[in-house]
Length: 357
Ligand SMILES: Nc1nc2c(ncn2[C@@H]2O[C@H](COP(=O)(O)OP(=O)(O)OP(=O)(O)O)[C@@H](O)[C@H]2O)c(=O)[nH]1
Ligand SMILES: [Mg+2]
Image (cartoon, rainbow, N blue to C red; front, side, top):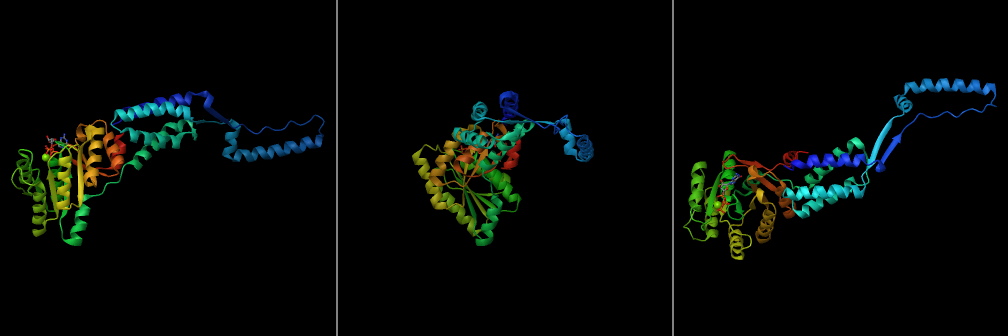
């Protein structure tokens, strides 16, 4: 991820450090003794030499004074706005290439500028300082995810009611697979689940969910193809309440975020099933498209969290940064493959580590 970032940072710091004009060399030299006038009296000379002897003995006892004698050189530099602009341009290009949205890249650069420009830094520390500042900005941008299992348990303990999760996203983003992965994971933690086959539109969609249900041992509530998806969700919630099942996961048909009719339909599903959590499922490889989709679904039903799938085939990584920042919603999971275990709770520090800085 962001594989060239480290390299670019190194090249740039080398360039900046070479700029003699901006360099400030602080040279600490030993304190010079004032020359005595020839005309000074002999007694004065004797007194002086006594004084010098005591001073030099004292100096030797202090390591700092030893440094003074050597005349240590400490090189410091200050990065000017002009120098930063050169770096900023290269950095922005790199961020955009790695699926970071323009708006997010601007935010990163502005923050970095504030933290770096005009600050007096030790030459050897420049690279580390920029690297640390960059990591801290990313840390701030990413929203801390919560654990779904905790939310489910919390609700169940308080109300004995099921926790309802509605999944939405465009066609083929990985909704059905993600639902099966999450349900499997929850069941393994002792949290009972039921699935709602509310994609009554796409041929074989109900069958696909039923197959997953059989494999992971989870009941699937379904109606006929072409029936009202909101009614399927409603029935699944009813079933869960009756059978004291802790979590309902509602699968929905893939829909383009630009289709008004289909967005109205998901609004209805949300109205009828009253989900506790609305999850947008997007592909991490799509970059700016995923951001536009997340924005539209958020506008239509108000999403609470995000799952980014296909992270296993995404070499860029910027989508997580951008979708999270723009929607101000946490990334809850990353889909990392096609089998049930291929799902990872999103971890900010792990993400930062992957940046390779
Ligand atoms: N590599 C990889 N493939 C994935 C991941 N998640 C899902 N897929 C694959 O993506 C394809 C589509 O997945 P589905 O779960 O059917 O997607 P969907 O959003 O339900 O699709 P529609 O119902 O048609 O809108 C399948 O081939 C999945 O195996 C992932 O994290 N990594
Ligand atoms: Mg599906």
